[in-house]
Length: 230
Image (cartoon, rainbow, N blue to C red; front, side):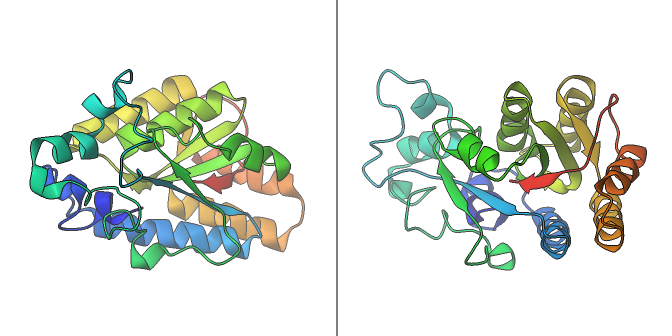
């Protein structure tokens, strides 16, 4: 979670989107990340941003500069040029509460999905990861885009609902949860995942954690044991 999406004065806030709930979301994500670390599960960060010269935005042939919110705001408000989701800026930085540890991968993306134009798929496969726990802001944009692509890449994605926040109203969050549970993956909570991971650290039988998550997660049938990406 970057300042752009979670902090007052960040990109979403400047766009008129309420970021007040982000504090709770950050705390839930912190608990989730700590539970994963304790269980020996890799934590992988995704950050979105652009070069100062905007050479990686897609250019004239791409719809990205015409739809991506930071790029639109910078074009509409020249005083913001080079300040939103731009490498090296405060807006681009991960919030202090969720700073990655030195050994945790940080993958930079230029599109909503963490799989688009990145090495995320290779990083996951090199580690033998098949199950993903996704947290972040915004649930209806980057989280859902990444989760859908994870499903298309044959991963088992689980959205951690209370560790995500939409860019918009609560109804938008409900729509994302519906899409995930009905079509693309599973939904769980930080509390239930933390309990399942704690059980796995006590009993090395991984299936126990999978069963625990399966009982508590919403969605069709399938395993919910996950590694975190997001």
